[in-house]
Length: 303
Ligand code: 13P
Ligand code: SF4
Image (cartoon, rainbow, N blue to C red):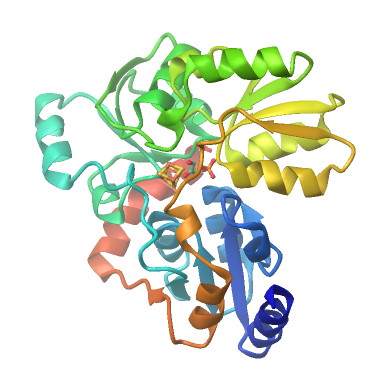
């Protein structure tokens, strides 16, 4: 049954000239029908290079919006309109405008996991893979970083010369992982390398052998000579790695690292989006496209 739906999707996307992008937190059966799988920024960059006029994004809303920002001439469809990122939606423009007034000499840096509306008033955007490099290149040492305190804390530790102010916010999925989970996993798998996403708490991040984006974690595990890994990010990464590296072993840092928003998208949603009976086309006004693009362009310039 799954295979039949996958065959239909593969046939239809070719006929209709559609490119399907899947974030690496998507389920295996979706990744298998996608043209590309990757982290949030890699996918939006890839979207600019493909010839297809329609892109279906299997991920969460801010990811589809970022694709639209970078490819405004393309039709971009969020596969399941209910898939949002709670962290991206934690802060609104009013809060950030007030903070900008309180800290006028600070450069406002937004993690890409923010709404497009919020990006319109931020100075520079970063991703988990580029945050340290980009913030390190910003001439102003005073940085107001939103919305993820854990990623912000990680960056601050790598860049001690920067004065990085954090605002309360973060990913509820990665926040579930505790120091106890680290202790338990290390006891169970003493030879395994611990790879974690910087959205985890500082206690978890400080115990890791590698800290990086979803693509970074996958690349590290694939290229490493080590044979066992504890994965500290969404469980789908673990499954994709198991298929990629049959000779290696992957263990979850916690069985609770499941992002329900990422998992809202099903294979049938993909079929419905292709058939125009589901999904939601991302529409952004010219003004929003222009203002939100500024912080994305600065990210590309500095990255
Ligand atoms: P990446 O940019 O590493 O893909 O992370 C996106 C995300 O939502 C992690 O929780
Ligand atoms: Fe958002 Fe966290 Fe889910 Fe990533 S894992 S999409 S940051 S809620």
